[in-house]
Amino acid sequence: MTTRHSTTGDVDPAVRAELARLRDSIDNIDAAVVHMLAERFKCTQQVGHLKAAHQLPPADPAREAAQIARLRRLAESAKLDPAFAEKLLNFIIAEVIRHHESIAEDATSATDTPTE
Image (cartoon, rainbow, N blue to C red; front, side):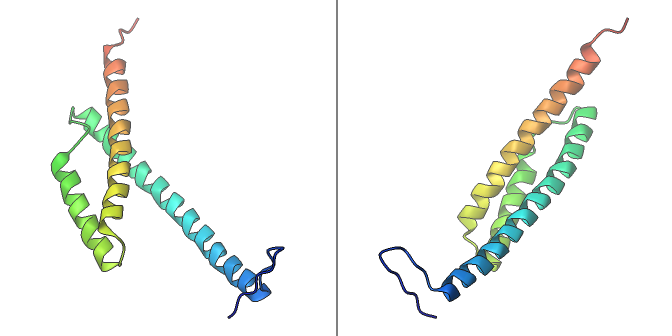
């Protein structure tokens, strides 16, 4: 496949079609990633409620370290930069901990509120 560029920015129709095909795939993958993250956060919300109900800390450093090591191994086997995968998981973990802290605060507030 060859490309042809002119001063007006014309692109070979075959190149344009291939770009569109690849971008459609990227869009589908992005949608799947969003849906998978939504499912993951539904589960972590349940974990947060369970932790709050049993006065467990929002963060679990041992679990987080194990998950990061596991994800790095998965990334390596998938030919994905393990450092990138770790950054992504750290971002997700930070958000999960923030949610767990909020859930714990809400649970504490609910038990501290006097009833009439």
